[in-house]
Length: 313
Ligand SMILES: *Cc1c(COP(=O)(O)O)cnc(C)c1O
Image 1: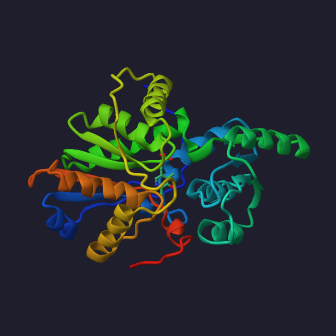
Image 2: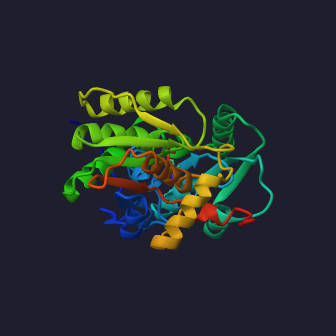
C-alpha cells in the first residue's frame, strides 16, 4: 500500500467516548468520535484532509493555496487557518449567494486577515476559472483545493480516521457520518472496508448532489491512489437535507438540542445536526439493538451554528 506524506496539523488520535445519556435515550450504545476536538480553530473533518493536501502543495513547491465553498464554509476557514500556520499564502474564493452580514466562519476569516473574494455564481467551474485568473493576475502558481477538499488525496483523511477507530479497540456495529461534498463518506466507507470489515457505515446526506455516484467514484480513486484492492461497496446514504443544503431542518434542530441538553456537546445546523438526526431516525426505526455499539463521527462545524438566526421554539 502506497503511503502519502502528511503535514502534521491536528492533534490525533482525537478522543472517542461513550454518550451515556444519549445511549439511555435511544436504547442502544452510542459513542462519539470527537473530530471537533482536533486542535485547529473549532476543529472539524477538513483538518485530516488538509494534512494530505497541504503536504502535497508544499512538496510540489506551491506557496499560494486557494479553495472555495459557500460563505460559511468550514472547509475554507480551516484551509486558511492551516495554510497560514504553514507559512503558505491563501485566498478564499467563495460563493457570494446569501451573504448578508459577517458571522460565524467569516468572523474567523476576518480575524486571520485571509483574503476573501466573493463570486456571484452558482457554478464551481466559474470559481475555479476565477482562481486561475487571479493566479495569472498575481503571476503566481495556484494550488487549487476543490470544494470540501473532496478529491482522491483528501479522501485518505477519513481512511486514516477508520484506522484510528480500529486501533481504539472497541467493536462498532455501525458508524454514522455526514456527507456534504462526499470525501468524508468515501474515506469512511473505504477505510471501514479496509480496517473495520464488520462495521456498517451510514452517511447522512446534507445536500442532494448525486452521492450514489460521487462517493463510489471517490472511493475508487482513493483506493487506486493507495494501490489498495478492496471491493467498492454501495454506500448506505440517507436523505437528511430537509428543506435544503445549509437550511436548518426540524429533525436536525431536535438532534442539536438533544446532544447539547444530554451531553453538553455542540452540533451545527448545516452538517452534524442533520447527520446525528439520521442516527436518531435509525434508532427510532429499531435498526440498533440494545447491545449494538453505534459510533457517531463528529465532524465539527460549530462556527456555522453562530451564523444562524435562531427563532427557537
Ligand atoms: C464539510 C463538512 C462535512 C461534510 O464533509 P464532506 O467531506 O464535505 O462530505 C461535515 N461536517 C462538517 C462540520 C463539515 O464542515
